[in-house]
Image 1 (cartoon, rainbow, N blue to C red):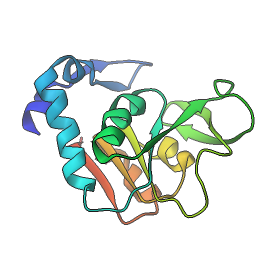
Image 2: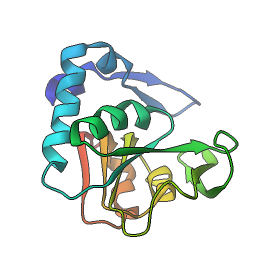
Image 3: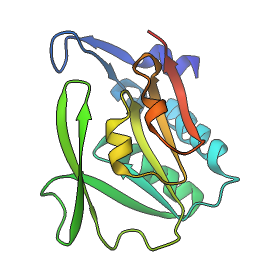
Length: 165
């Protein structure tokens, strides 16, 4: 995953001063590298019993859809407020630079289904925690210095690239 780390672009002071945004779009633009990323996620989770992938808006959709396809399971989307038809449930959460809320359809996950939460980046853990405490969590990038993994309850928090500072 060193090539992935080297391809991720740092954007200082975005979306606000003091934040260093980890831009994964160069990884997504490289077909071979994107395939390596998805293959690494598949390798991590292939042996688990997973019924659905839960992709968090919006970059979680990019990683979640091919992962769901490769594992032969369904994809559930978690969206920002007002983007899904009713009936939905919502959860508010804190970001490293503000607050927000997410929604999911009430019928998206059946009782007893095992769900893997997927997103592009783990920072403080607020977004992933709001998405639910399910099978596990998988991220392209983890900002480990923000200790987001501590907020997430499953034993399994997986990140392909970790930044410790």
